[in-house]
Length: 339
Image 1 (cartoon, one colour):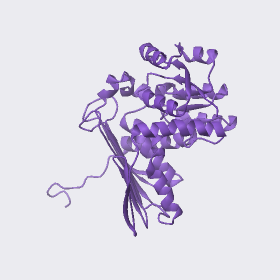
Image 2 (cartoon, rainbow, N blue to C red; image 1 turned 135 degrees about the vertical axis):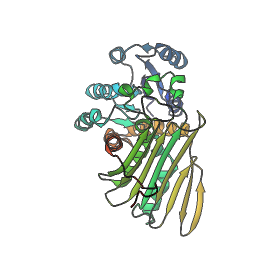
Image 3 (cartoon, rainbow, N blue to C red; image 1 turned 45 degrees about the vertical axis):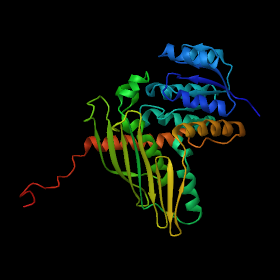
Image 4 (cartoon, one colour; image 1 turned 60 degrees about the horizontal axis):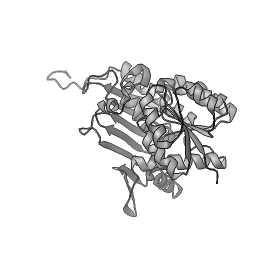
């Protein structure tokens, strides 16, 4: 079995530790670390992994000595880094959202396809049992179509990014947005995967009312799929505990109802209800790393591609646009308003 040599590009990312645990599970060897913006983080990981550290991507690529790049760059730099890797013929995995917006990512989609490049995106929720159960329900004929679904990820206060050494996450020109761009990408990916077409944003709203920051701390959207299914999406930095998370994926169809809440999955059909233990976020990252390297080894495409990421980011772009341009309709609850 091939023991992959991995280069970490963007070691200052707050998910680095979870990826590193995945490398250990996959028996992969980290042979180089690069972090242009945080020398201390790069040196810390280089010491822990016993490998050289490079100050720039240029230095990393010139040195070589790796089979695949694990890219965790600042969002504003992600698409350009991925483009360089494709042009250099280097397979890679990259953290979402892989760019500031879909406009940045779109040229990369065709570049990857033309080159036949391997480019995996870390939509780690695809590795949860929710999707396994959903596919099984479809195969059994219990979920021929989706009537409605809802995807919510609410995490703690955004100051945690400052504590993690990535304050750029709160700067729109570097991150591309707040909770919607970051956490909402998982829900957007789920909606695009389920609809399989061009969903329509019916309504949306964003708010920075809790922390008054540059990026939104909460967003909500209502989306209709091509087959008429209605989907809700929520993303926020509004949880009361800084390290806590309220995540729920929920889908209803003609013969089934499936919910993932606090990692566990509940499946209800006419036969009854059953509960399946889920996977923690850390466990999903490990599965992502192990599976991605196995797919690279065996010549299979990644479970989530750059094209998948572009679709999710395109939906998010339209949610932002809807939130900016829609004035809404007054409910007319004041006395005499409806007269």
